[in-house]
Image (cartoon, rainbow, N blue to C red; front, side):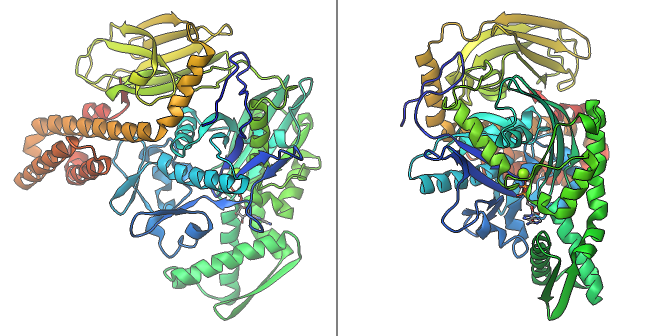
Length: 618
Ligand code: ADP
Ligand code: MG
């Protein structure tokens, strides 16, 4: 394996291996590099094909995953085993997704809790991290195949509004795919770099990045000064995009030929071919004035004017979001120096002209909108590789900082390569009724189990008032000041009890030690993720057993004899599964217990028990 060395002062890597830029999109993903000869950002593609890899994973009967165009063919014919839009699930619990549950045609597990979601395919359970890792792995393979060299380092983009959990999930997905994720970059920041905005230190600009993709719409207002990108505001609609334009067109045609939607709604293949034809028509109309096709022996036609009139309401919704984003940033349109078009759907001429009219300027659309984010990620990767010496990099943390949570897992609060100064916080809760103290252990490193990382400090947070397990809200905050000194504070939010300590994270670590810790994390990524998943499943199983036990003890009278027997047997099965090293078996048994207990739990679940299900436990 290639040797890496990190310059702690600049955070730049000093070696020759290529670092790729990856746009991990909801609909399409792709990988880009700075071309070694032309020095131009370039999207990688196999000869003659598209640079885009559909973000779709299909599992065959044996559980083998295939990704991209091949998988996309199964969207309608095998919906239960074909996972699309996994990005929407990243860092989310079922409760977060509830209002859009109908959107998913595959099985998203509803365990009625605030835990991270899983997807069930056959008897396998996949986390969104694993699903995204299949896509990243495909991109990695593709890059290696085209470049004919191993690729192990990447910059990955995420939407500007992604929270800490979603960013961490994206990092973990990269790790699982065998990639060392050097930095997570905001998509609008990447797009702006691809247009060369922000590459000059002395430049000060305020820009709007309008991103209309396949299923999502984002508008971000950025302020760029001295090489720093600040997100002033974001707005958008996570369920609005090119797919909605396709649907509007499908309805238009069904109307045209006089078939009510309910008559064909169960005919999967007819719907599939209509959807494909609609998408083809939409793309054609981006460069011609009309489209004609045949569907199920019917001639279907549409002109640009007709198309524009059916999509105007959708375009107007994006303009409303733009107004809100401007208002949140406290700006008016004439304070925006540039408007950048991102996402395949911005090829639609009405979109470009309407957005230009709203911002009272010509929009930037010279860079391919499908590729612009990945190209910008490649530019950022090149800066990290130290090839672009003129660009000033901010001070960054050389290794991740986090605390130990249940099962000895490392919970990262400030990831490696984060800007200094920085702050981050997360809420934890107690495990036992009346628990009055909590041990906070601070670690530095990239491995999933704290035992492989370096302990920086530890303190006993005392004085938590007596409450049932799961009730206290202990917020742990990390603050790194401009000198790189970390202070860790724990505060119980209900009572206001607070304690803090100071740590100097870099102290005593040589460049070589940092390097060795990084290499370790890459070598052990796969086994670490497997251990993490197992520890998480076990912790979840143990919690559910203890909650169920308490519940039964309290509510025996509410349950029928049959329910009691069924519950006891499901609990026993789960107990057995917990003794084995099989994450899927544990999850299956958790599901079975949930199935049995859900009806009576719904009948009688009281707030204290519900509370115990919520929140991570230290
Ligand atoms: P995401 O960022 O969500 O992964 P993309 O930026 O790849 O998505 O956008 C995909 C969308 O762009 C699809 O709905 C696709 O139909 C649409 N699209 C691609 N090319 C064109 C075109 N020429 N005209 C109109 N829409 C297009
Ligand atoms: Mg995108």
